[in-house]
Amino acid sequence: MISNQTKAGVLYIVATPIGNLDDLSPRAVSTLGKVDLVLAEDTRHSRKLLSHFGIKTSLFSLHEHNEKSKCDRLINRLEQGKSMALISDAGTPLISDPGFPLVSQARRTGLEVVPLPGPCAAIAALSVSGIGADRFVFEGFLPAKPGRRRRRLEAIAGEERTLIFYESVHRIEAMMADLEAVFGLQRQAVVARELTKMFETVKAGTLAELNQWLRASPQQVRGEFVVVVEGVPQPEKTSLDGEDCRIMGLLLELLPPGKAAEAAAKIRNKPRKIFYQWALEARDH
Ligand code: SAM
Image 1: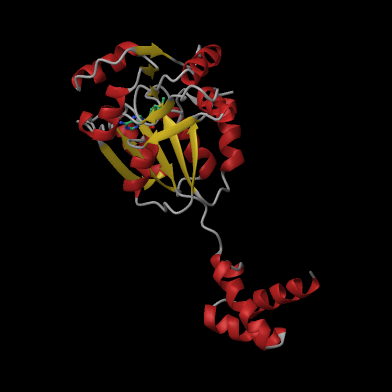
Image 2: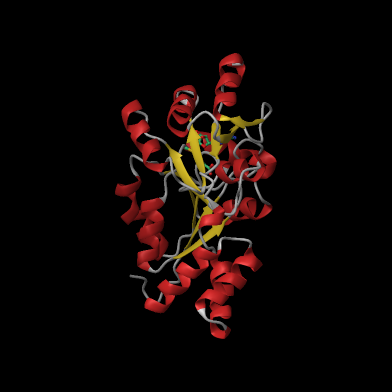
């Protein structure tokens, strides 16, 4: 626990570029320059980033293989008043990157954890995908083993929200083939490759079209990938949404269920019987 005498340090979670160095925010630059320690996944890689911005702060290696064992020591130093910034090789820490054990322990200890938001490949891809971005599920990396990957895809094949996947160059073709096999040829998707870099490519199409494109253009099977997949469209006219229920609720205060359902069906252009059913269920509860 934090003692009353010492002011505890702050743990900053700092997003770094996913390709274009200009995407490092001025606030990130000043924070990385002023903290006592920068925790980095690969210190050699991050030293280059810091040097580019003239930042001389000491680096400490924190990666998926040592992060659990280093937590206590780092929390201790934060409690003693040292401030730290956590960065990863690219993008937002913790998003398919190290940092979760440290952040959760810092929170449990009552330490201040401050986000410095910025690049994230998943959000960048979603923002240009043209696929619904109101509700989405971030799936990260699928399992590397084909059997497990298929089973995972089968489990989420009916998901109605947009799905976002990360994939490495080694598995993009196998993963895209599995997506097509499990989700069907016609599902809309976007392959976002090398975002913010020289060979940035964003290609939209059905899964069948995208696979055809990948097979025909080996130069596209290079670099880093985000795949955004449309969710399964829900049969809108056979279910009620929040606004339907609100209107039906108001009408039921004035009219009997049959009349209220009739009016709601006209207002919302949906079948009367689903409103009537809803009214009966609401009355029974
Ligand atoms: N924390 C990072 C973030 O916020 O996006 C992700 C780290 S994860 C270890 C690396 C994966 O992110 C890559 O395999 C790829 O799927 C995706 N990725 C990272 N940079 C990318 C880029 N410039 N273009 C497309 N995908 C990228």
